[in-house]
Length: 169
Image (cartoon, rainbow, N blue to C red):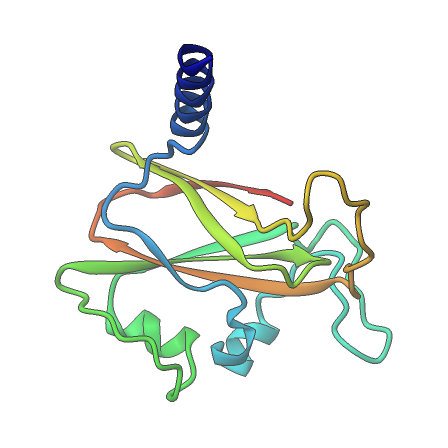
């Protein structure tokens, strides 16, 4: 009986080890997973995404608006164009940079960084929206009006020009 119990516990530990593995490079962390309030209003209005609600029945559905946008912030000048003066984001641009990803979302759930890989000219970011329900519970209605969501990621300085982001909800 003890042997069977120890084998089951070992199997559970191995499954947890392999399912929990992710690769996060360059000491990357999410600084803010819903940063709309600290984005400069002029920048926000000039970078709308398709399908989000912007008030007074304003929803951009045509192809001229992208489904998502990303921005790479490597210096103070770009930072000052994007963020408000009281953003609370502290960054050392000699060693760090920001990646900002914005997209249309219908959930306000917290987002976690599952994986970030840097190649020579490309970065791959996998984000996961938190699911706050137990396995046996039915899904709950926590969706809201589509809105533009900003995710701000701080990472070590790197030289890449292309980003691929996936968000699992």
